[in-house]
Amino acid sequence: MIELGVNIDHVATVRQARREMEPDPIWAAAMAEAGGADGITVHLREDRRHISDRDVALLRETVFTKLNLEMACVEEIVEIACKTVPDQATLVPERREEITTEGGLDVTGQKDSIRKIVRRLQDRNIVVSLFLDPDLKQIEAAIETGCNAIEIHTGCYASTRNEHDQNTELTRIRNAGKMIVDAGLRLHAGHGLAYNNVLPIAEIPNMRELNIGHSIICRAFLYGIPKAVEQMKRLIRSVSNN
Image (cartoon, rainbow, N blue to C red):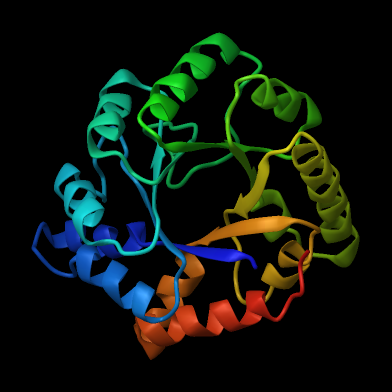
């Protein structure tokens, strides 16, 4: 069955807008799990714009499902991951000026350094995933790092405005997914996925994990976090994916 990882960064963003204690992402994680989330995803950025060190430490103590820490390939964050020991670490690119992650990691340009980080994290029994565009050269390089999983960046697919472009992006993602699965790695996907576009991604053969944040949190403002998560979970679980 496909696992749903709920990203709660946006809850922390609302908190940081006023530098107050509420809304607390720790409670949001609990509500997401109550709604059926299979995991909680957070991105500890270098500039700490939303999720804080305190959040990561408390989530490690309170998350009952799977804690997935998105992180840049920088020493400070690697040290925090090795100390906190999330269940999974997803290596992502990071730029200070971006609003959200804009694309996949460039593995071909830093394969040796990424391989070393992958090994350090795995030595702490952390499952390591790399966040990549559906680019076969990048995926080939990622496989050589020894990572456990690859999460395909679905942002281009999510931003398409017509059926032709969507089918083109879906073909790229499916081809990338086949390469990942054939290499014996877990296939994940995320970024820009929403209630109106998630099913074609969930239907990709051997998809194992979808990480979704913005769409769920937006719906949660109207219906509450448990209900919003439950509705997304029902959608992706409607797919029989072997």
